[in-house]
Every structure is written in C-alpha cells, then in structure tokens.
Length: 321
Image (cartoon, rainbow, N blue to C red):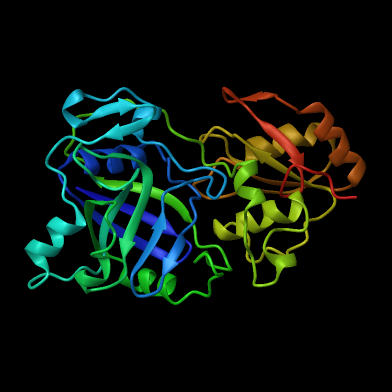
C-alpha cells in the first residue's frame, strides 16, 4: 500500500505497513487531512516532523476524529487512535535491523507520551527519519512505525538542508499540498473529504523568509497569495493582481471558464477567466473596478452547477484599496 505526498520540496512516495498505524495514515490521506500541513521539528540528519495541518496552534487528531473505524484497527480515545498490538517501535526496529537495513526514510507516528505498559495513542503527527543510523533514533521513545519512503529522497534532502529557526522550523515554509492513495488494501471506509482550502490558521502561520517581518505575510491578502504560490498556482507571491480581478472559489469541477465568463458578463466586460487546473477556484478579470464591484455584490453565494460559489477580491478575502 502506497501514499504519494505532494510537497513544496518535491514528491514523496511512502510504502505503508499493514498495521493499525498504517491504517490511520492511509485513511487520513484519503480524507485529505494532511493538506497544507507544514514540516517542522527538523533535526538535521536525524528527523523531521509533519502531519499537523494547523501547527503550531494545534496538533492533529487521528482518523477517529472524523470517522468511525472498525475495532480491529484500534479504539477511539477522544479523537486519538489507541493502536492494536502489532505495531513496531524504534527500539524494535533498532534491535532487528540496525545491522542490516538503513533507517533513512522510515516513517513513524509520534505517540502521545512515551510508549509504556499499555498500547500507545496517536493522532496525525508523523516523523520521517533523515538518517541511516538507527543509533541516532534510539532516544526517541515515542515513535511507532508507519512505513518507509520508497521514492522521493531528493525531497528529503531539500528538507534536510533547509534553513531553520531555533525550533527547527524552516524559515521558508515546506508544506504538504496534496495526497494521493496509490494502493489501499484496507477495507473501504467512508470518510469526509477535507477541502483543498487554506484555513485562516494556516494563513496566520505562513513563513516566507528569515526576518521577523517576513515570517508571515504583511496582511491577509499577501498571505493568501503566498499560499497560492506554495500550492503552485502563482509564479511568485509578490505578483500584484489587477484591482478589478475577482477571486472565485468552491466551483463545481464541471464548471468551465466559458460558463464563468457567461455568468460574469451580465455585470460587465470579462477580459479573462482563469480556472486553476485540477482545482475548484480561479480568477475573473473585468474591464473596470466598477464592474468588479457590481459582480462581487451580485454573485455572493450564487449556485452554479449545483455548488454555492464564493466570490472575493483579488487572490484572497479582502479588497485591495
């Protein structure tokens, strides 16, 4: 079973174990739970942490927080998953493989507290080993194996060599932008899909540079543009939108540029429509600010192809003056 993580450092394919921890990882990926989660806690040549969409303000929960899972894969404890026996700890790995298999690329869930007499609980926080030496991981008593990186070691190199602050957080964000399940042998589970939308919490915690002034966007508009750049939808965060360009979101995937142009043409001359490939949002440029204002006022919460769309100014949620 394999999961593809698209990140701003490159793609990473993880082969996931057939275990309750592996089940949690696959189903969180199925729910798109990892969307825009940052990499943090980097200890160079040792380990890096991710999986928490709204870090540092909160740590993520397990699949139990959003779906009811079969008991064979663990128990729900306040949104965290208490693992079933059969999991593998760092100590187990070190004893069995320290002389034969590299530790590089092994993926672990971070447990809540050290693993003691009872089975551990996990949320969504995971760590990836950046070292081949098991001895460098031996002091980490709260890691349970999920699987191993099969492809994407150049992305791990990029993460490992990034500049970080004294907390190990990259000065320029590295984030997960999408997840794809390449193979899932686990029983089907109906899970709600988390939207591909950057949250207000994630915008607040964007990092774009080394200086304190540059760690987050100067306002909500530029932060949202930076988020779109990280997602690959803008060539650079400092691109200035036209003052009569509107941002549209929550489109039905079947809605095309021609349909959007036809809708907006009722309120002015449409100079261009761009729908981001594979996404449900885009941009509409009208001929004047007056026409943009008219369309903005008229099209809030309008239903298009069965979806209630969002219309806003520029690349974010705030009109630029």
